[in-house]
Image (cartoon, rainbow, N blue to C red; front, side, top):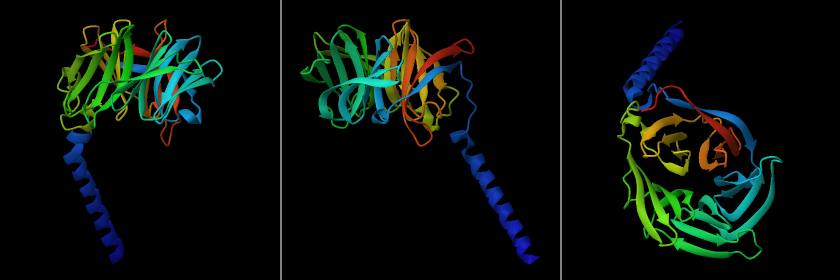
Length: 288
C-alpha cells in the first residue's frame, strides 16, 4: 500500500514538473500560426536512390527535369512521365552542389562555397567547364541559383559572417557579361510577415535553400524548418508558409515550367523518401 502511495506521489510530481516546463517554454517553442496561404500537392514523384540528396532542379520542358545532388558533379535528367533518369552528364568529380539553372546550352551549377560551374554545351561528351568565384569568404554557405534573365543569375546566401546577419534573408544578383555582383534582396526576420512567430522561436530564423521567380512573384524555400516565402514583384513578403515536414522533409530546389507550374524538390529523411512535387499555392486570406 505504501509503495503504491509513493508511486502516485512520484507520478504527480513528474506531471507537475512537465507541465511547469511546458508553461515556461510555451512562448519560446509553442505558438499558433495562422497562414495566409497553403501548399496543395498535385502530384509527387519519388526520386531514385542516387538523388536522395537532391539539392537543385531545373525544368527543361517535355517532362524533363535537370537535377543535381549534394555530393557528385553530375547533372541528372529525370523524366516525369516515365519516372526514370534518362541521361546524365558529369562536369566535376565531386563537391557540395546546391543549385542549378540552364541558359540555352549552358548549365550553371552552384557549389556551396560560392563557386559557380559554367558548363558550356553540358550535353556534349566533352563540355567546356569554367569556374566563377563569387565571394572571397572562408566559411560562406550559398544555396539557391536562378536565371533571372539570360545575363543575370540570382544567388541565395544561406550563411555568411561578412555580407548578411543571422536574422536576414539575402539574395545577390550576378551579371554574367560584366561579372558584376550586387545585393538584390534583403529581408529581416523583424518584417511583419514574422510577427506571429515569437522572437525567441528558432523557426523565426530563415535558412535559405532556394530562390526562384515567376509570374511577378519570388519564391524562397528554407530546408531546416521547411518553409516557403512568397514575395511580390517589389520583393515585399506576401506569404510565409510552413510546409508539411512529412511531404517536404528538407525542401532544396524550386523549378518553374513554361506554363507557370511550380515544382519543389526535397531531400529524404527517415520517414519520407527524396521527391519532386508539383504544387499549387492556395491563398487562404488577403496577404500582407
